[in-house]
Image 1 (cartoon, rainbow, N blue to C red):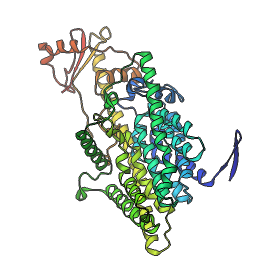
Image 2 (cartoon, one colour):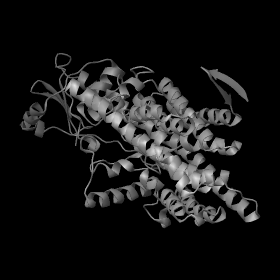
Image 3 (tube, rainbow, N blue to C red):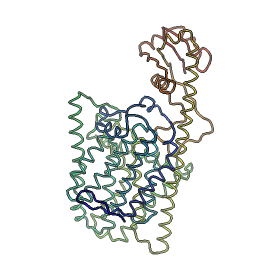
Image 4 (cartoon, rainbow, N blue to C red):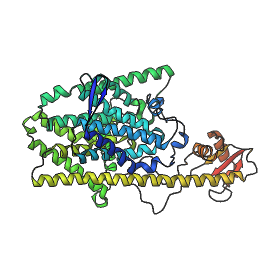
Length: 506
């Protein structure tokens, strides 16, 4: 152990912290080095090569600041390394807060988070990954400060507000960490329901205070700059829902969970990943019941009810934004809180006493499932980046081929306005789909609109072209010349109409 001095406070660096920190970097590089050391653009990053994506208009008033700590550019290694640093601090906070002691458990906390599909999905959007991982860190840090430090709730409120103002989805992480504290208090700290309530009611103030802090600051900024929040993902319409909308939110949540755990196709078509997830779900349920009985939590009726509710609703609360906006659609980028279902099982295994042979076998089976999930998600991350590389290679080839045809036109370079009519697809045969599907990853080309082609010609070929308006495209479609054009990649699919370079797709 090593002591470090921060102001008047002496902090003893624990062996477990070092293990978790180093494990995050080692396992993180095993899972994501492919992404960190290669240029793998996506449909979003091509026009966010310089920038952080949606900020103020999406209610992410602090995203520009936290993403800007690295640079304004999409730099895979810099953004990736900073993201890994944030994740490693999250791992240390969780290890300290939940009293994780064994070396394997510390490594698994790191591995489960750093290999989780949400982390891979976030790295698909590398131009903003460090900002999102800062939101992740702040969502956990706010709870940690409230848990560990007297009067730390005030700093915690600021952290939660900053997290929400960076990426709203990470409020779900805050909520599930709080629920895990409640479960640990009832299950392993021997607290009665009354004592738990007296100790933990402050977390309600933490969440409400953080939300108010975020809302006030965001509203002031929007009013000052005259910003109206976008309707994308229901950001501009959050509030109390109707009963029917709550039912729909629950249905959406269960559907998202089935997709993420790859259980939607049924057991007959499930793969090893689905079976591992099913084992975790069953183990969490069975172990909760077992520990409630073993640790005599059942003697406190309100306590046992709260424990079962917290454990059972943990994966539902991981999709909390579903229940405040009817228009939100969860995707992999927003689902980090689900990872804490795995961490809950790990804490059960770590802190439960498993003296008997049957208990040791149960513990070994649970650990094996978690180890397998780390392994599977690490492989899946590399498969995802392989697909991104295929997508980039195909997009570059298509962009280069069309550019060659444009440069063969007599009207080029005098004419530089471009109209890409329709879309072109180039799916790969013989390449397995990802299980689960990861938002941001595609085997197809990522050139979906005119701006994608123009951005790629700018950044990858150093040539400038101009966009065509919707009205101008309508006029081109109405011409007989366009209607008689061949469809790309056939000859004659690139020509000039109405002083505009037209590329005709399906």
